[in-house]
Image (tube, rainbow, N blue to C red):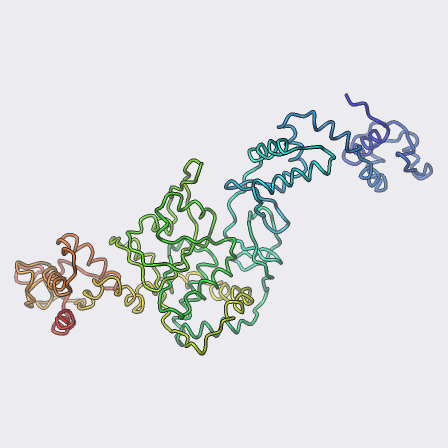
Length: 521
């Protein structure tokens, strides 16, 4: 039992008075370590009054707050505790504003959970606690407490992906409502501007959008819909965006607009070539915007990439830690000068791939070198416009993007890397198949007689293009060309109609002689 001195007894009494509803008598006193209480005003106290009287008196509450045990007494008490008990003492005072996640410590600063340097940040917090309490310490003592706190701190949950933090509040991206900051949203960053609660002018964005859209309202809608999908993290739509085209055409500006809307703290770079590397995905956890801002030539099947875009579970390896299973909820944007070459042929990539070409180069004498900075200043207004464009009907944005997948400009971009799209362009769908329609295969694969086959025509085309690899076998060709025709909006049927006891497809040359000339030249 402690041997309390006068001031400590007073503090104890005041704490009981302020924080309990008990009605037992307390020892009479009328001086509080030099603080005089007016006997006439507090008659009950002078008579040893009840705690209920003390608890209801604001002046005495202030007295209770001002009278604390001397720091040295608390230091003696603290130093006698075991390390785990010391951690509990610290957490009583700081625990609600400290959490741990992904090996880092986060402290709530009133707006968001701010990431602290694990070794230094938490150590400084512990040192401040010791300094405030008059507790002596050394490096070993601080390290022991920090190591134990890392184990005892509550984990920070995943951020609420429907929320986006700004200086003046938290925006619900789905409803457009601006709410007060709440630590329960688990946001780890805010965009350092105020979000406008009404429409604001965005002259630089408007000018840029008009230029890259080349006067097409349809193209403008595609760009706005893609920005909407990014801003609202519509990962359930399972799209990724391939922003391709010429240098100086506006690709990097698109990315900077998206990055400004999402906030740098919510974004992470993920070049395609790093996805299948060990530890290559360790940094994408809880990041809703993934991007490759300067993607070099890439060729691969995109298996892991497809899983990320689809929101499937993936295995993530982390240095010095056990692997974890993670389900991404993110939008991926790839900025590249030429389309990406995915070798996967079952349609998994094609169904999710939205190519948006930026082919209108800004003339050198019209380049605005301050455009990025100007657009950053319009971030709030741009986001307001994007969200309100599709606020009442988000599905409209999805339908616009679905249409863009197989648009003429998207198919033209695919032709650059996949010659089979060029081959498929030579054919049309015949609703009522006739003898002009090709059979699927024949005995003379290099002939181009009208009665000959699609597979034979493919082999002739392959030879004329001087492609330095073996042609696909018949089964592989059927699988691949079916998918290519599907992407072009041509529902290919291998056995569409039997003519003269022979099955014909529903495909015919659009212009046979023109196709032959193009292939041979």
